[in-house]
Length: 400
Ligand SMILES: [Ca+2]
Image 1 (cartoon, rainbow, N blue to C red):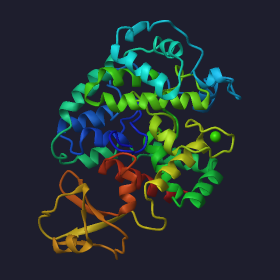
Image 2 (image 1 turned 135 degrees about the vertical axis):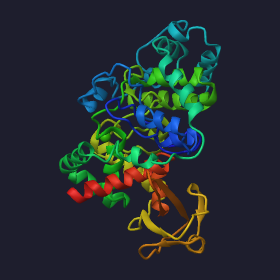
Image 3 (image 1 turned 180 degrees about the horizontal axis):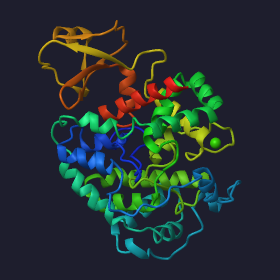
Image 4 (image 1 turned 30 degrees about the vertical axis):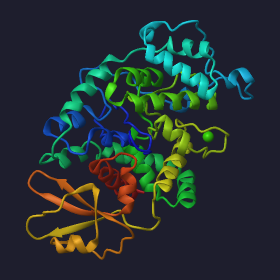
């Protein structure tokens, strides 16, 4: 998901045990080209990961249980519960955000727009904690994420994910959730391996879904991160609506430092638009494996996935490539061929093509990015992210 556009969820999960790529919303958020410094930040620390010197908290062993535990018991909401989230009440905001006039205005808007109780929201925000680490981290990475991709950047990026741990976890997850995966493929037209590829890269199938409270993350970024404060205040609004709709205590859910949640790391806006109840229990639960499978498939379907169509086609080059690579520029097949780029296999793609450049240590590889590749980048606006999902999908499929 993009920060500025309706992309998925998503900001990335800070998986401390392994570096992760910039997440959906995240790539667009920061720009698509990474300097060497930025690559270190992204690869070494992960897009939404935390610095190496940060103490690692144990991952949630059973996210579904934890999410369930945070639910309120209002299966039949009364008028009061329709106007509030959690059971918090306060006459004024206490704690880290006590003196924030901008938060007071936000609460006023939530009362007027969505009918929340003012005392309830002041009680909720009295629980919020300012995440200074997040602000420090984003300040550093904002400075570094400019310029062209570095030589060898693709090699370093992919090796963080294309390993036995991710692939074997994918095989195991696929065997445990075969029926749901096959049902998602039938219903949405998205091959199961691409659903698996997303869940592998985002959270290694829920083995690490983040440890920051969503309330803390979104309040901090909404009111102390000026560059994208409007975006995060919007996500905070969506999070409160989501919490009320789903009967969640808004102080309990945890996720990435940027507010992404569950196995697929959906941001609240993506939850409201694209999450589905895929196990039929009447709730959309991003921490539930079946709901996550259906939600990722629905996300792809709603972002233009073309069933039965290719994702990439490798290109042969003759001489220097003078076309601009990247997902923001569209080409016709004729334009690519006239520039000396020839598909290694017949190419009958429907729709605009992208020129993908993968930077190895000693050479650059070029590929066609078909419309389905572009759909993957709606989850995270990054060529390397989408290529990693694609390769992960193929690697897991090969083992099934
Ligand atoms: Ca469900």
